[in-house]
Image (tube, rainbow, N blue to C red; front, top):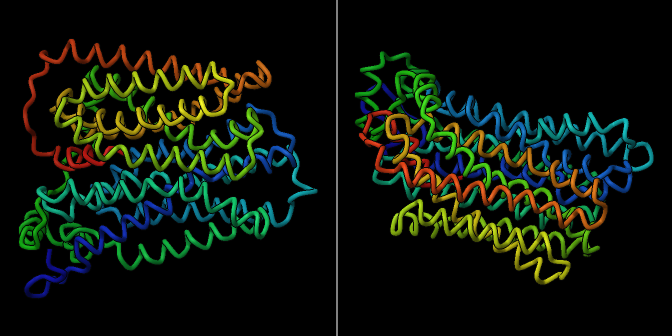
Length: 452
């Protein structure tokens, strides 16, 4: 796609440049999944937090990170994405800066349970960066022709999703070298650098530049944007596609499936450091390595999961995936052997990673008339599992004592069984769907390939 237009209508940026910018922005924002997981032990020791409080703490960034996906993703259709991207990243900066200030002024002697609500507040702000996923999906999709969107979005989602695993590795190393507050100071600096890079790289697609900066009419802006290679344009009503998809009962089983796979993935990425150090008394570096390995493995295996879904069908792959999650969850629930539990963890990671791809493969088939809205509900509400599950795991640990850290994975047994049942329900009703192609689904169909 050209970087400037004929005549007086200048277009800034390019597709590849904006892909780099969006990937950097999502990478630094999505790292907030591990905002508290690697450091939870320090807060437990100083603030005397119970398991339920820890579960709620590590989950807090996922609350804003999931709920904000829907409105901010819809906002992209109005202005192209750069403004909502920056708003989310700046909110994340405020949250991380607040955590740094708290630790610098209060840690360790003056940080008490009285500061727990403030810790949650800054965690919620820090988690805003997680919601950049839906913004970047739209921004990247509008830049690229349909034939190249799959590859572009695979790069965007694949690289961006690795950040929680890397944060889980690097943050404890930085803390060990300089202290807890230094870890959050470095995190703050990295996010600020990322914002600057995004500011200079992440341009809106031509249509939005022509509409916003040059105030051209819709028809003229679309015609000029097409000369720059843009093939996709915003639907006339984002609210309408959200309402249409919400009216279809098939949307909600898909939300539940993604709640288990992606929401469950987010939850474990945040909870696993606490589990390994509390249940097995594992050294910090072991807990970090196992958490990072889980996060990276689940992210990477999602790529072949998309190919398997294309080859064998989304339902069959989903059934195999959730069965794998079920087996892993049973192992983690009943095992008190370290290596058997490790095996269970990675079985869950494999199942979740592949299921993430399978679920989005199912979206355009089961709700063909409102793919964009369905993808919004699935991505936003499904990710909410990252907020809901950790407090449940903490509650079981608190009520059952030490063994409760293992027994808490009964939650995943229930979720896996429910997901298998819902997948079977969808498959039974598969022939009742009459798919048809509508003009407004391109972005979400492309986004489904990313499956994040």
